[in-house]
Amino acid sequence: MSIGRDVRKVWELVRPERWPYALGLGALFLVNVADAFSPVFMAVAIDLTDASLSGKEPATPRVLELVGLSASSFTIVTALACYLGLLVMANVSRYPMLMNTAVPSHRIGQSMRNKLAGHLLKLSQPFYDRSKSGDLMSLATSDVQAVRMMVGPGILVGADVAMIVSLTLLVMFGLSWQLTLVALIPLPLIAIVTNVLSHMEYDRFEAVQEDIADVTERARESYAGARIIQGYAREAFDRERFEGFSLRHYGKNMALTRVRALFDPTLDLFMGASTVLVFTFGGLMVARGELGLGTFVAFLFLVGYLSGPMIGFGWALKRRGLVKRRSEERRVGKEC
Image (cartoon, rainbow, N blue to C red; front, side, top):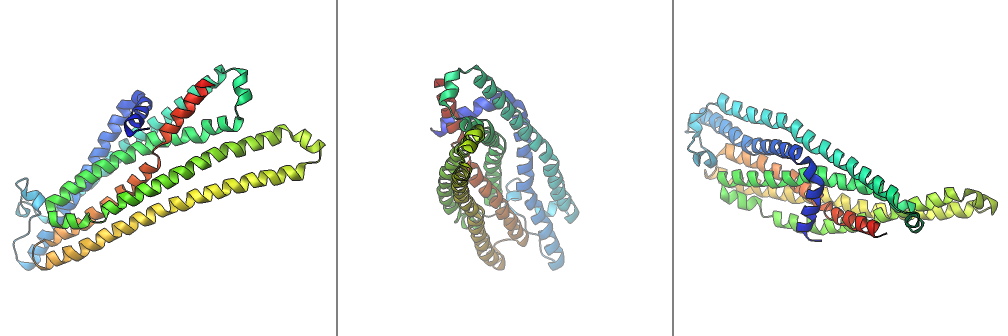
């Protein structure tokens, strides 16, 4: 399934809740604007403090020069006030951001469960003769939950990555395009590694989801046939068989967990490499007088802001493909 068809499937689910999502994403934009531009005013405050101690003219971050402002038009107090004001705006906006994305996603999940239950009640007896109860239980529980995570945290994280990366890079290029290019050196490697790991995890996630249905069906058959098992004294055999199912499910979960455990350390490693590059080349630029001390400190904050979205990007990629599976299962259910 192409990305375009994935987007259309997600939009079908989100459309009834489009206005709450619009409010939530609008609040997210305010959060990201505040996060991206607040280090600029911190840089101004540091440069003003450095100038007052050294008696030199305060350096003006280039991003302020582009909008016709200079560091001398601020005082240390006003610069800090702007910095704190943006932080307050970001934290105030986080509540409507979360409430208008998390709550609608729960309503979408509940609506899916209701539609699924209504559809199952309309199906004929032959459908249940051919279908495994474990498959239906897995579809109604863990699969619906996975889709809810896609339309809730998945959309929020995806939008957050697009906004904060765009705004942060805009500010970084406005401060120093040379240092920005240095900081971006590890990012292509992040995209490659994240793509590889996301495909590995998706395959293992699919295997776990399918195995949940098998384990559930095995447990149901054991309970339903308890009298027969006891009548033929096959308790030990049934227990060993279920233990084999459980160990197999444990092995598949461990394989999934091992791949998931690689995401955060790998991304942190690359973002740490970016920070080291900024420290090295930025420090040399400050020593040569090509970069203000405040701008250098602001750069370190902005590089740190990129690490969270990169990890979020990896998390969002791990959810891709779930809508495809849900739509295929819905089609198979209708055919049956």
